Image: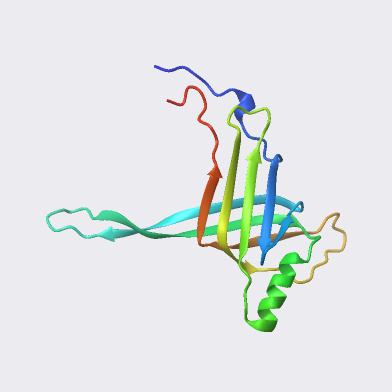
Length: 157
């Protein structure tokens, strides 16, 4: 039995990340992001099999989705939707997330989402009595790349 346990320093700090968005060749450091999550979900279909009571399963494609929260203090994404509204052309985004906590032994992971499309964008907002204005972001992506991945921790194998 391996009784190695996680060193608490190897838990990645949620605040020590970077977010970059590229739109039509212009790259922005999205400092206003406060939360972000991207998920890739394979499409799994049932496969009827003669001679078996239970069905089998097979993956046939997949779907990428992202969501996040940001401080309401940029117009970059609103301009994307304005372009779509005015021209019918929806600019695709590339979103890069970097996670690196210098106290953790795992190093750095970079994830790049390609072919991102926004589901919706808040075009105007106010909230009397609120200290800060935030906005929700969501959309889809076609594929993702992992140019850098976390190192395996000692004791994982």
